[in-house]
Image 1: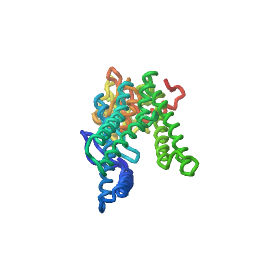
Image 2: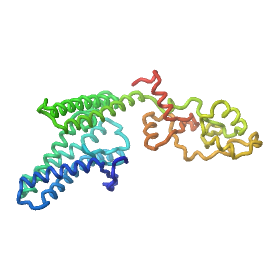
Image 3: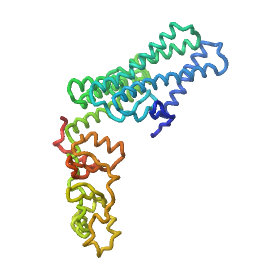
Length: 374
């Protein structure tokens, strides 16, 4: 992962930290360590900063617990978790896919804040009932406050915050369309982001008593992510109702296994199909049985092309990924991205080959004026 360092696994989930995390760790350690040194002058040497580092690590442990809440809620729905990453503004649990229902999406979204509020209750209660004092009491109180703030802040109803995902689930429940929920929550996130940017800039130049540089940075972060999710929501709308069959390349590179190489060379290659370097090979029933590279013709003497079939030089199709023709196009796009595939073979329900699907064919379909949000 770019800019991320892997530290290991947590409950089988790869755990990363972004390089920006170390900057925040140092700032929190320095700030809180300095506060402890001033509040408790009896602390000698570097002890205040050691305690400050411990407090900073516990703060990030709270953020990690928040993300584990999302992860465990997703796992209960059979959704895999690719990774958890801590970075400048918190953490992110990367899920393999979204929940299939608005109820499931709601519980994944709300699980993080619920964990934070639970930790607030535990730390606050510990501070009240346990016989602790001095720096330890200060750290416990800080952890209680941070978890309360973390839970409350994340409930702001705008993307990419948890509250935005809660709003998305509610709109999804009402409209029956997940993309509409994503667009609404993203628009609210954009509004909140712009508001935070204005307040942050106003505070920097002395025009607003509300906000700070952090408000400005958080606003920029929210706006950037809300813009991205809004675009994705609009894309989801355009893809609703479309399947893999809709994006099959016209005149896909398909050749019969029984076709002589001479005919393959003359009628297929010389007819203007030289843009394709690989062809899909089908049998008499239209079933995909292999692939053939144009360069494979060089392996066969030209004088034998007339009676040598394509099947004699084709390669196995076992390494070629396939998708069902009725598979939703959004899922197909996710397969292309997650598997880093340039193209997929599309198979009909009867097992016959419908054709080839590429990223470029999806882009061409989306640019068609007939493709509008459902």
